[in-house]
Length: 126
Ligand code: I3P
Image (cartoon, rainbow, N blue to C red):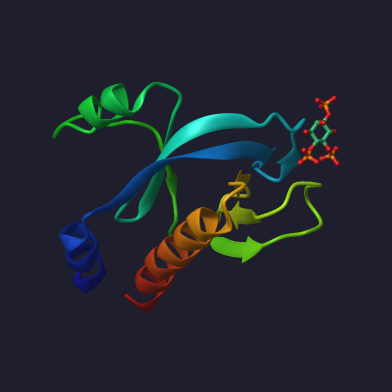
């Protein structure tokens, strides 16, 4: 339908190292473990890579199917309650996974917040 067509036409938005902590899976709380992760926003999905930027880019080749977070129906919000760190955003997916993303440099995380929110909004508006 029209939704999948517009998703298909969206491109990779950006890739950058951010601090990430998964705090819940399927609604079940997890022990927080912050790691530095290469993050790529690609149409309706957010990809997290442990490896270097070069390997992450190589893994994006056509036909490759890296694991991604489905942003359809996700909620993205700033949070000051889920961490003692500054500049933290929370992403809650429709299947109950919760992630925190953080960067010490406010403009960096702000850019990601806005880009992810834009992707989520475009998915829900069809
Ligand atoms: C956690 C660790 C995290 C911290 C978290 C601690 O301890 O210090 O960095 O989150 O706080 O529980 P541990 O390594 O023993 O698991 P923030 O850095 O985001 O504050 P929390 O339990 O209040 O989430």
